Length: 211
Image (cartoon, rainbow, N blue to C red; front, side, top):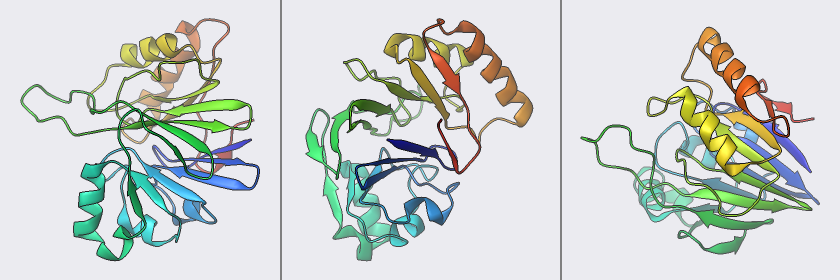
């Protein structure tokens, strides 16, 4: 299995000749979708959904109904490649996937909550969980958690507690364009110190593979 971190929340998973790309949003280079077998989008916010990136690939797209509606409005030429999935649904995106959860984390009580679906991907012998913008656990053990490390809706303590809750032996930082380098260094320090010894943590530069 090969896992590559791209801009912000985008992760590319390659296994057995299949390539699944998650959340190639507005901070993600077009090259992230090159050769994709499938693209998965967790929710409608532009840092996760960029129709220009979807147009840069001819891969099938799997996402929730709210995102599908946005794609139909913004890019009807792309909409024919969209398959709508629901929480709990298992589907084949080149690799086996299960959709997890239904709602975005609370940004503010006065704001309506967007829909959000995380994805649990089975890549060979490994299970990888990308939660999107939610703190909804996958409900089963995973080998790698893509852990949100900065967002307007979260505290650093929530990132630590979510990683502890999921309990993955490996944790890869995502959603890292919100803080400055100084802020990210602080969060990296918290995660590095506060996760149990059996849980590793890494934050990668764009385009780097997880070793």
